[in-house]
Picture 1 (cartoon, rainbow, N blue to C red):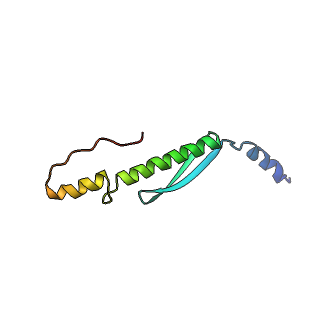
Picture 2: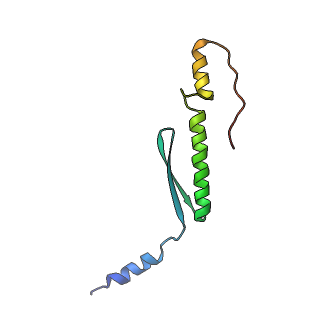
Picture 3: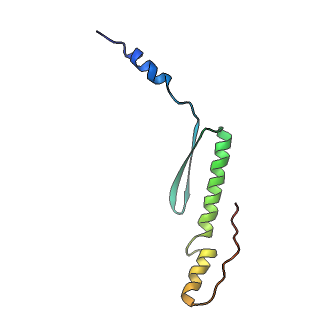
Length: 93
């Protein structure tokens, strides 16, 4: 009995998920970050990805171990034995 391959594939293609997926890629902490945002409009997903990238960039700068910034200052002062105080948080969120 010959079967038509088109008939065998029809049910499979009919079950395809149409949920929108928007992907974004950026670098933070010297690492490639891949983000997939599912089930929202393209505009909302692009806005969310941009905010994520901005937040990661802020953390990357603020937490850099040797560049100027809060963590860099702590790392400079620790070996001196001098007292240091924790700066007020400056997180954007």
